[in-house]
Length: 157
Image (cartoon, rainbow, N blue to C red; front, side, top):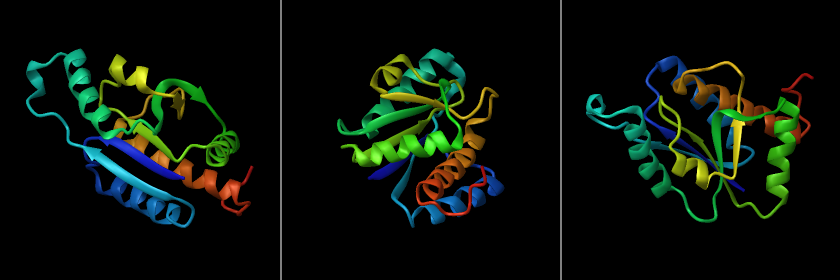
């Protein structure tokens, strides 16, 4: 199984980049993982949030293949413990899913077209995090999930 993390915009802060890189390197021992960055839109001051989400949706949808199992990182998604998230990932790996595509949207979230394409939604917390920080939190949880699946000592219940 391959995992794609599709993100809108670059990760700007060095401390976030360093943390993300740390977990991406660790994840390569467990799965194929690819981070795909979609460039942030230019000249957005003239766009409403809805127009911005629609333009981002076009770019996001172009990056997906029909076979992708798409999971949006969304504040209204399912909330799972780390152990249940590991079980979720493991079930996808055992089933016929060949590519899990997790998507972190832009600052205004997702357009309806992206919601319609999604197979699932996942929330990392009831709290709101910047779309920059979500990237780090997510790759750490993904790494944690694989260590749980493998029975390795990283996770302490």
